Image (cartoon, rainbow, N blue to C red):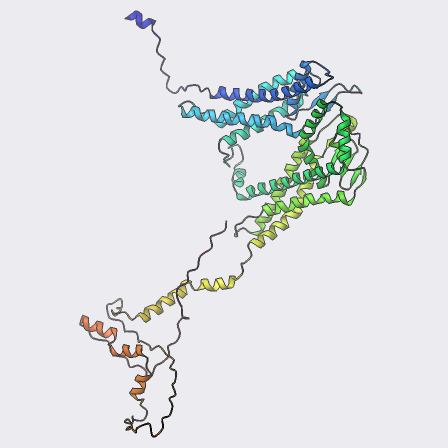
Length: 570
C-alpha cells in the first residue's frame, strides 16, 4: 500500500492564502501584438516580392526586396527612410509618409488590442485573474515593439534603411495610439472618467456638454475641409488630364512599374486631400526651397520629380478667379462649425453658444495642424528639403476662418431656434385659463351656484347663512298679436284692477320662465334640509321686487379645453 502511494501521481499542492494563479491572458496579449506586427510585415513583403518578380530589371535579389519591405513597414509608422544611391552621393531623407499606408498597422494593432481585452475578460469569467486595461495595453504594445525593433535592425542592411532616431519615437507613438483605441473600444467606448493623474479641474470641466459639442463641431469642420480639398484635387486632375496622362505613361514603360506607380498614387490620396485643404485655406504648400503654391499665385521655381499627382499643380504666376474660388472651402467649413455648435436646449444663453463655437474653431485648427504636419516632409536635400504644407500656418488659418464665420452663425441659429412661436400670445392667453387664481374663482362660483342640500357650517358649528339665489335673466321676445274685430271678438269682463304701484301677478307669472316658476313652486333646499334635521329654518331674506341681473363672475365656458403641453426641449 505504501509502494502504491509513493509510485502514484502526486496530488497538487494547495495554493497558499493570498496567492493567485497566473492567467495565460497576458501571454496571449503579447502574442497578439507579435501577430499584428507580423501580418503587416507579411502583407508588404508579399506585395514587394510580387513586384520584384514581375519586374524585368530587378536591381537586387529577394533579400533586397525583403529589406525594402521592412523599410516600407517602418515608413508606414511615419519613420523617415534614407536613400544612399543619389546623383550627388549625399544621403537624402525620404519623409513624406503615404497616409493610406498608415491605416494598415493601425488597424492591425487596434484589432490585437481588442482581442486581448476580450481574452482577458474571458479569463475572468473562468475564475482566473482578470487583466486590467493597462495590463492589456502594455502586453500588446510590448509584443508589437519587439517585432518593430527587429525590423529596424533588419532594414538597416537594405537599399533604404530607416533612420534609427526617427523610428525610436514614431513606431511607439503609432502603436500606442492604435492600442489605446482598441482597448477603449473593447471596454465599450466609455466617455470617462479620466485617469487620476489628470488634474481635478480638467476632469470636472471635460464632463460638461460644451466640450463634447465643441469636438463634434470641430470634427465637422475638418471633414468639410478635407472634402473640399478632395474636390479641389479632383478638379485639378480633370483640368490637367493630358499632363497627368503623359506623366504616368512616360514614367515607366512596363506594366509592373506602372502598377507600382498607381499604388503609390493611391496611397498618397489622403496627403493630396490635406494639401488641397491647405491650398483652400490660403497658406498653400511648399514645393521645395522658395516655391509655394497658394490661391494668390505660384511663386518660385520648383524642381519637381515627374509624378502624376504633381502634374496637376496650378501653373506658375499670379492667381486667377478660378484659383480664388478655392476660398469657398474654408467658408463652408466655418458654416459647418457654427451649425453643429448650437445646442437644441432653449435655456442655453447666447454666450455659451458663442463659446462653444469658438472652442470648435480651436479644435478644427489643431486637427488641421496635426494633419498638415504628418502629410508633408522632406523628399531630399537642398531644394527638396521642405515639401508639403507648413503645419502652424495651416492650423492658424483654419482656426481664424472658422472662428470668424462660426461664432456669428451659431448665435444666429440659436436665436432662430429659440424664437417665440407664431400665436404665442394666443397660447399664453389660453394657458391663463388654467392659472391657479382663475381656477379658484371658477370653483367658488360653481360652489355658490350648486346650492348644496346640506347647509354649510362654520368652524364653531353654527349654520352659515344660505346664499341668496339670483334669478338668471332670460330675454323675452315681445309678441304683438293682431287686433281682433268687434264682430269676431266677444266682449269679456275686464280683470280686477291692481292697486297702483303693484305689478299684476299674472304678468309676473307670464313673464317668468318655466325654470324659475318650477324653482318657486318647490321649497328652498335650505328649508327642506332644516325640516329633515329638525332645525330651525333660516330667516327668509326679502328679495328684490323684480328679477335683477347678476354681476358676471367669469366669462361663460362652453365645454372643457384640454391643452397639451409641449415636451421640454433638450
